[in-house]
Image (tube, rainbow, N blue to C red; front, side, top):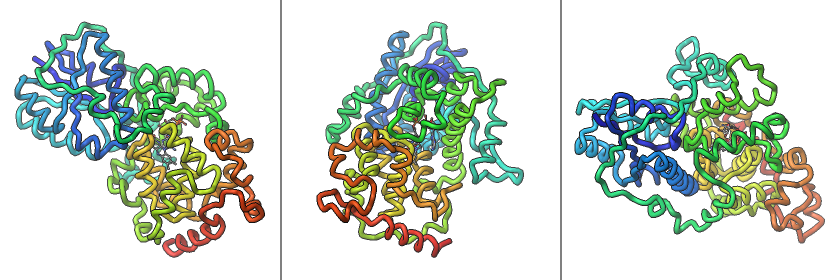
Length: 461
Ligand SMILES: Cc1cc2nc3c(=O)[nH]c(=O)nc-3n(C[C@H](O)[C@H](O)[C@H](O)COP(=O)(O)OP(=O)(O)OC[C@H]3O[C@@H](n4cnc5c(N)ncnc54)[C@H](O)[C@@H]3O)c2cc1C
């Protein structure tokens, strides 16, 4: 009896239920990644695809050391799987669930078709700590606010032992199919900017664990305070690794022994709450799938955005808004494929509440350029900032990027790092700009645009 393991965004050997279950009671196992070009290019941005390529290569190398070949083939996810199951007579297919709505659809179809063919289909969930369908309020409805969700999700989650890659010898059954080289598929010939990402990131499971250890020994002891300073390395930078399942939240919680009779320090508690924000994002996406392109709070569908905004959008993307911290952050993103959470909020607020450009435009740019771009977190982040999401910042809370800079980057460590022309910006005082014509001018008046936003928001209160 043969089993088939299909990978997607679970690119790890440890804490991998699909792998561990696929070898119990089977004579041989096949390890397969199907590159469904349409599916992947529709659901992954350019930066995501760069990461996927490197991460798959890393997984392939790690499996090879165990005498197992990760076979990578191209084709339609469902059709190709069914074809292979029939051709090689697989009795069972194992996957870790991918919670992207497009993948859920594919997995549902696959499940239906495999059932018709009497093939077992086993799916596992380590993307989330608790399956979203299990967390409901007393009326049986999904929570719409983070705090009660957090309380309930934490109660329901029982710490699961981290699975180790099986120690037994695995008989690897290699199918006879045309394999493709990751580099041929994902390399971004048209996106030369991706070449520099190598300087900043090393995708893969080994590096994910290293990052966790460094964070644990370093910034965690100060997390609550330093996590907000974009000029520091106060956060874990685990987001792309979590995005591709190179590490699970279950592993992180086990590593800290967070739930088992462990008295959390305020820093640890804050960190775990952030992990649960990620849970909440998946939870909302599961129960309210329309949020991918529409506001959670439907009354904001009619918000009056600017209609002629292409020039300003372009300047925002290129870090040419004339607002120092916004431009620094957009440069950080373009240079490294990552942006600090504080400046994600500042740049998103500037786009939606000063330039009055629809949040969907910003979400789209982040989706293409962030290595950790993740439909659930990205959409939630954008809707939270623009004021139309669950638990969103109230519409009248509009970040002033100048004050934000003073508070969170007072010594300009961050802005100096990411702006070559730092000296050409005003020192944060709007009056400066009026006095000195040589300074870079903001593309919008912060005060006036804020008032317009408030007026438009108040119309749909
Ligand atoms: C406009 C906007 C867009 C965003 N887009 C994404 C995205 O596409 N992908 C993504 O992973 N995160 C996104 N975030 C959330 C957050 O900015 C990143 O998760 C965080 O900056 C990642 O850095 P870190 O791993 O060092 O975080 P840490 O502070 O070390 O936190 C650890 C983990 O907790 C989770 N987490 C932390 N903060 C948040 C948060 N506010 N919301 C949800 N989960 C969180 C992440 O998985 C993160 O890796 C977005 C936030 C905003 C405001």
